[in-house]
Length: 259
Image (cartoon, rainbow, N blue to C red; front, side, top):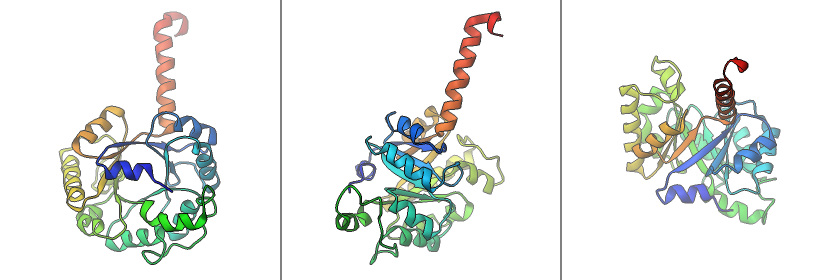
């Protein structure tokens, strides 16, 4: 197995990540053809379950995107299953300290580096199983989400945990934890200062930083700021935005007849 996203990030390049909230192989197939470097199935806040995740992965298999998953929580059972199902990266919510980061890394990695149980039932389908086990520890991306003041305060310790590949910031939950409204494209000076702090810590430890964004323009700004993994909204949000704009443009162009 070879993780093209990991190679891209290691080379210092930025990557644009798609996000799947819709439990449909067809919509995943459509998204996989849109130029994303990676596509993440959201099992935390989307309406995906394990079976729909597998269907999404099957639909994306023919396209050059790296399949990832945001798991519901830092729990080894589901982390092992999404990896066995073919995920090449795990984004895990609400990692607040080194112990939680180590638990995530342990769940993602085979012994002797971790505690992952053997059984890559789908992940090893396209090659020798022994080849998968021999390379998985080096290829799987292990990505804790930093979403709270505790996570911010403990960032040095989190990034020092062996096996952690980088971090992923959840702006909405970060805002909530700091007493702010939950939005994506944040402009508060205190939040932008936190981003700078987290980016500096990642540079110090040789790790990448990712961020969820609401718009392409904001994602581009964040890449210029130093974020390497940028997600733009999700499939349902992008569909709704395009549909809304099409309806509004039609009504405007048609005039009174369509209003």
